[in-house]
Length: 281
Image 1 (cartoon, rainbow, N blue to C red):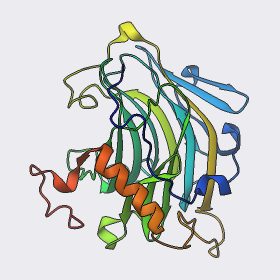
Image 2: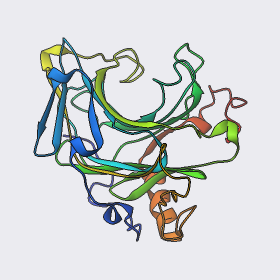
Image 3: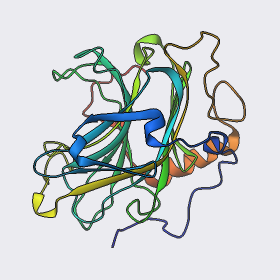
């Protein structure tokens, strides 16, 4: 069994449900295979991707965006999934290799007796050469993400980034300065891959292919964004009833509940980190 805290109790109602204002699209309407096509199956607009010893798989949006709301319902693999990452994220790493921006939702695989960790992260002009400055905030969810589909979303506009789980904001990352906020066009991606070197308890537990295939399921795709090639008059998406920026008091209360009860790591509170690199802390 998963050791869920506060299992009978979910977060207080956020009072506002951004996903309900955006219609769903089928996978092919917004995305295409990026890699591992033989490990990707489409059934009535829903997508299954999987990882085995030979390959993982990933997908990418048809268009780049300069802002928007990007969501998908995801169901994770139960059992032993250590070392495996199932993800949904924004990135421009193909355009700016070694110097890219990224906004991540990553599910860090786990051993059978422990819950999944949902990691949120923001990179600004990060690189793959060890100089990446991650801004990780991690959570253990208030439900079992392997039992059903749940909606996960990233809202990114010129003033803030908000991460949502079932329309509950779990993290808000405001734009404090241009150097700590991603402003360049990004694509939307999803993937399943082997990150044994770090994904589970800093690499303590690795992917075990006796349990293959490792499967990620996605449906209920939602994109409402300003296409990078679209009109300058496009209005950025909002995550709250207030319009352009911030959350309502009810949304802040729901977010505070999640962070008090389910947050398990915050880069700003990590004494081993060099916080001169993260002035927003």
